Image 1 (cartoon, protein in one colour):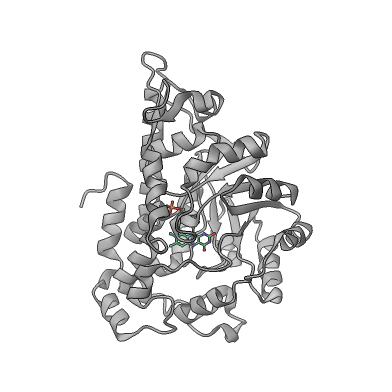
Image 2 (cartoon, rainbow, N blue to C red; image 1 turned 135 degrees about the vertical axis):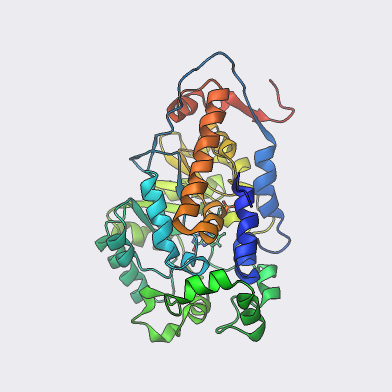
Length: 385
Ligand SMILES: Cc1cc2nc3c(=O)[nH]c(=O)nc-3n(C[C@H](O)[C@H](O)[C@H](O)COP(=O)(O)O)c2cc1C
């Protein structure tokens, strides 16, 4: 099929991946209302068209986390990329580096941060989930510190996991080894299977010295989910702040009060996120709460956003509403499954082109001009003109 946009990428991923993996990536929690709201609320925003105003090719470079990026978006943390494509974490990180942007490795990854840092020269970030095994948290932090990680993301919206009903139906994440039904679904995707198995059975590299987490990615994933620290609190953020000298980003903020607490706790930035509609079903869309959070926390503080980004225009809307940058999730995970490094490069390219055309049709010459124009160039459908 011809892939023209990110929705096409999603459809191509559906044909390439076993159903249980496609559903794991695509799905949200419970009734998936927040998942749907993330998209719908972008569509409810309109941009201001200006004509005969700019003949320049828009400059997409901008600064977030104190780093100049060639693009206003980076690749956010997505668990188990190495199961959707062999060496998936490395391929995605390479595509990000080639495009002049960052990649954030999830705690839940096949590749370790150490081996990724050796294989890729670009900008790397590491996302930490606090586990109830403090020794392992320390080990992960030490590995991140050694691996020239630009910022540490602490994800705080996952102390309990929302039930993703598609995963329950597929028997995924409760199983510690493939069931006959899972094996049958994998056999139906031979291209995916051959790609993955040529590297041997996947396992979580960071857990090599931790046989208590089990063997093989499936069992390790189930153990990791069980070992998330449910009691994690702002005191732990203070501990992490004192322990991590580099930049600290808190991901998973949806309320003004929590944004202020994150800033008080010494975070350098936050990501407004509802985990892509995978956690609290009924939570508001991220784009709907973004402006209020920025007003509350102050414009001199880095606020990024993710959730439902499928179009360049979504990125333009988020930045007009005050985001310093945007994180991709599913948009690049699907592309990775479809085409590996080239697939992610293609997804990045699609978004880059869409952003450039959107800015040009708005009469804007750069992302920095868009940031300066701010909310004057975006409004709700039916809102005052
Ligand atoms: C399959 C999948 C796995 C994810 N794993 C993680 C993770 O390990 N750590 C994390 O902080 N966020 C994780 N997320 C959330 C993403 O970082 C991001 O918040 C979300 O995907 C944004 O929504 P979008 O996919 O609609 O763009 C995951 C999301 C998906 C779809």
